[in-house]
Length: 431
Ligand code: KE4
Image (cartoon, rainbow, N blue to C red; front, side):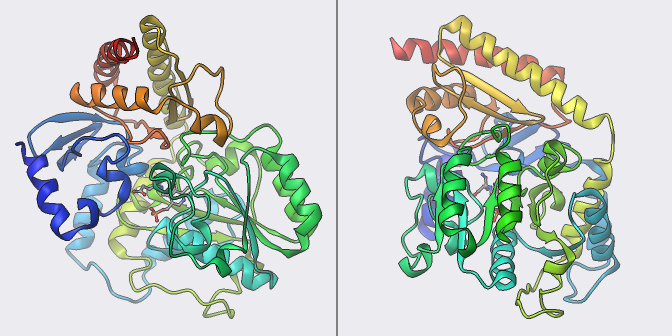
């Protein structure tokens, strides 16, 4: 038995499922999750010495690859003078100023420790500011695991078939309304009936937790107009898309400005972080200035902020996003060709360095229903065939994948060579 197999057995004694986040357990794809011991650039190394080209990137933060020297040096320097103070620091001021310069609509911002905290706090602010209780989210979208948002959620909740989690009081869940993603007519009908009750609409401007689904033309603009008309707070959850798909996130890519934006992942450079921010008239209602309470022992932690600031400054490169897009286009095109050669029904897309793979004969996948109709067995077979060949994809057909600036010609060649064999295995298994 290899080290990872031993470690997952040992881990299960004291950690639920042996993991600290469900999707890592490989429950939906089966098999033993590799226990990672180190990472560098586009590569991971597991406890058995196996190396993998990484297309998860810690679920988003590693847009420049693992262990970027500038980020590591900055964290090392900060750690040598202090790791946490529980007091304000100039670093947090610099981070707030940078985020407000780069993110459309951000006039003020509050740092927290995860995407979950960011969306939970943004919702509380929207409810406090409007005096309304109801919120609208979209089926298959995931905004972290706070109670109001674990209703028809995506990501791990979808993977494990508990989109609405036990433990969420019915009295609370009833305030969370849901409609299908990309169905603007359904949203218009809901607003016509209950618009004046809605505190907030929270949306992933690109849905990355039911695989990778872009907004239909006009969808985001429609949400913007309805929220403006009914005095509802529009929240863009850019925890995944922020600084990923465009220097100004999905807000910049699609030219729509929300009232509040939530961020995470990339802005922490691989350390725990989240943020929520937006219109000053809303943010001024947050304690200690306003009555809406929100707090955090490690919010604005110097190590996380140093890592994030260093990474965000490196992302201020006009050519970087074109480079990421070009490489990812070559990667996705190569996968499509390999699938076609093997005769495997397959659809793939990318938006910059964020991508989605779908085992389906459908010409496109643009909504939750089509995602859930994809061939899970084919995906699982492909996933393991790639893992065996040193390619680490997201272990769920409901997750988006990520490339990085550290992925180069060697990684492309090796990935596509593995894919040719993996698709052939899928085709053989389908016979
Ligand atoms: P965290 O609480 O996991 O930092 O962020 C929650 C969150 C909020 N909003 C969006 C759009 C997100 O994608 C996430 C978390 N993303 C998942 C991956 N799909 C994290 C991976 C995991 O749960 O282990």
